[in-house]
Length: 134
Figure 1 (cartoon, rainbow, N blue to C red):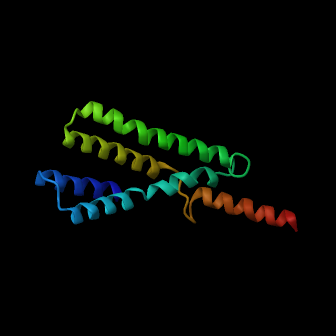
Figure 2 (figure 1 turned 30 degrees about the vertical axis):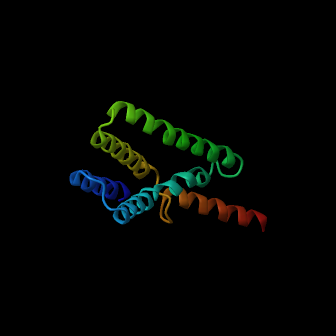
Figure 3 (figure 1 turned 45 degrees about the vertical axis):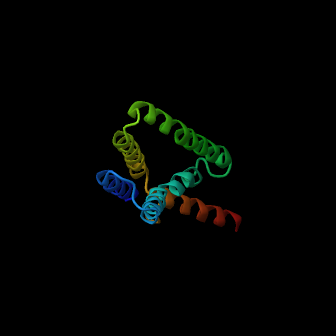
């Protein structure tokens, strides 16, 4: 949803061929950022939800996820701007496609909701740990 909103808002801005007023621009940036960052906490929490990682390797996995995310956040705009060479339409299009690709990867991850496979394994491991303490 965040990707769709981002592409839509920036397509409208590009079709206007001028920057919108400051209030509208702030609204576009806020909505794009808020809905675009929705998958961030999911990806950050993924390593801690995996039974093989949570506990012993949780800190290392979280650091690795953060490092890769920050490297991509630093390098991708540099690479995209060198490829687009000042063409804002191409720049925003490439950034939107990469953002959409990240959403696809998040959708392909195992479900973590209450009915998800990983959530069920975590609940079973927690129940087993409680029973062992008794």
